[in-house]
Image 1 (cartoon, rainbow, N blue to C red):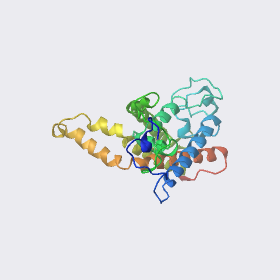
Image 2: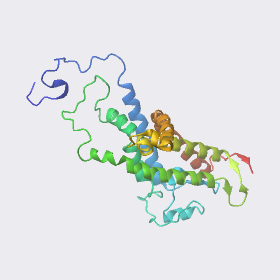
Image 3: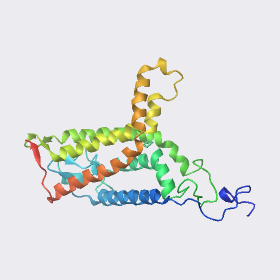
Image 4: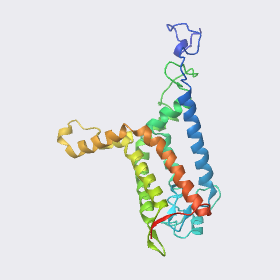
Amino acid sequence: MTATARGVDAPGRAGIDARTLRTDRWWLPPAATTVGLLAFVVYGGVRAFQQQYFFADERYLTPFYSPCVSLGCAAEPGAAHFGMFLPDHPLIPYAALSLPFLLLFRLTCYYYRKAYYRSFWLSPAACAVPEPHAQYTGETRFPLIMQNAHRYFFYLAAVIALINTYDALLAFRHPTDGFVVGVGNLVLLVNVALLWGYTLSCHSCRHVMGGRLTHFSKHPVRYRLWTWVSRLNTRHMFFAWITLGTLVATDLYVMLVARGTITDLRIVG
Ligand code: FES
């Protein structure tokens, strides 16, 4: 043992040679997390830069391209609800105004931190499994100190969720057929409802609702909101994963309809 040994090798710790005494499949959750997150990042990355098949049936805009603010959005009249001002360049996603903030919102999320600290950084991979890192500085230094900016990304994510809601509502109006309802509308609605579930169940949202209060009894409205958000908050991990799935499913649906691979089934109109 060296003088600088830390963690399980620190002076005074039991001298156990085995890496861990756990006999269960403790590596399964971090491995599954790695696969799940990587799959989403690869899919999202490919789609964000594809710059094609993002608008279907003249009304369905995929969340990966919302808001569509690039000059390239002109290829799909009706997709740009908030104007077009970003240069049309292969390296600039059409939704470059929202995607970086959504990424930062998820990257600094308290649940995802736990997920990727365990799966990618092995810090630690699981309870009673020593981490390979010799030092632990927590989130006190750059770059991890940036995790503290999560509350600001929450505000931006809430604005983007409003934009996604606007997209989903606008999708009920077809430029020539008027009010219509198709399977795509249901897909967009379910996705946006779950996105709100994820956004409102955020720990920062819970703090915004009921944090820094000395007496809940003097703030009944904030107490009520805090109670609702607290209930959602217990399901934050669920919303974190299900929204990765619904984002991909929604984007895939819009892409397949836009490509003509499948036809959107009209329920009304
Ligand atoms: Fe997960 Fe805020 S804690 S989004």
